[in-house]
Each structure stands twice: as structure tokens, then as C-alpha cells.
Image 1: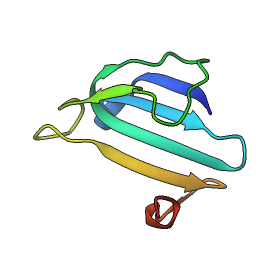
Image 2: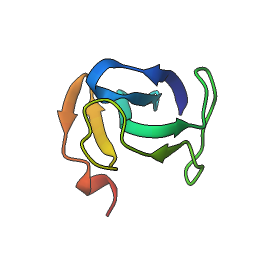
Image 3: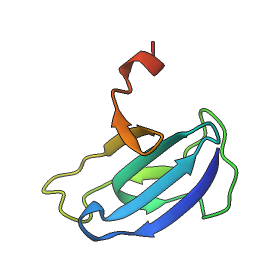
Length: 80
């Protein structure tokens, strides 16, 4: 997909958003380092960020979210 956001974003801390071009977007928040810049094309398995404790995170963590047509969905079926 294409990285459409790679920067700080309020309580999400260092946030990275990927547009998968089929109505799907994946979001990765609380990162300590963002390794993919806006406009970059990324592939499955590529390291795009390092998890961390930015924004409102109270401990080192990663917030992952999958969205379809603007709505958050359960990502588990897509990993099976």
C-alpha cells in the first residue's frame, strides 16, 4: 500500500496510516520511530515503524487498527 500519513497526531503519538487502495486502511499508533515516509509504497513484511510510548500511551505498545470504507473492523479474519 501507500503511506498516506507518517507524523505525530495528538493522543495517537507517532502515527502511520497505509492506504491499501481497496477501501482498506491500516493504522499504527504510539510508535517510537516511523520508518516509512508519506508517499512511500510499502510491501507485506516490510518494517514500517518501531513500537513505542508516544501520545497517550502509558507503556510501550502498538495500537493497530484496520478500517474498511472508513469504519473500524475486526482485523483477525484477515490474518488467518
